[in-house]
Image 1 (cartoon, helix red, strand yellow):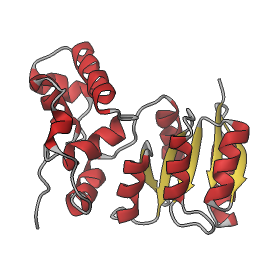
Image 2: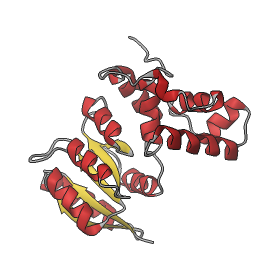
Image 3: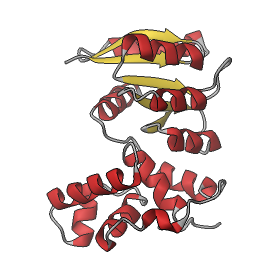
Length: 218
């Protein structure tokens, strides 16, 4: 099946570049372009794309509010935030709003195409090194949720959430906890369900917000 993409960026040159890269792949197709977040939300409602490449800073409605509106609508569309700087505090806000990951505008064409595929599959796109640095810097910029929010998790599920917070894959978590990968997937699904999280990207942020992963200093 072809993965249908909407590109949202206020710069026509950027939109055009992304379109060229995406449309050059047999399994990807740009079905719409938006120059602001409000237009992006409308296109998602009208076209039902699989993925939105969402710039953060746009007029009328920024990418964060647009992401929040798309997620709140119950749409199955996944949002992939695009940013110029890897330590962009707005990216963390976008992840909290429900974005499934982020990438930098200087990404290589093949990596961009693969990022769209990853998010379309329902996976989170979080480069461990960049994600860790970003969260270490901005994790406590908002008030953490009450610890009681984790009360419904089993001790093993809390362990799994903490390791998700370190941006570890299911394979890496399975190896560290001496579990099968299938068992880890079951625990991850339970964590997402019990905490009401959209996907793994929000689980990473939740692990920091709940103090399961301590930000590194310095």
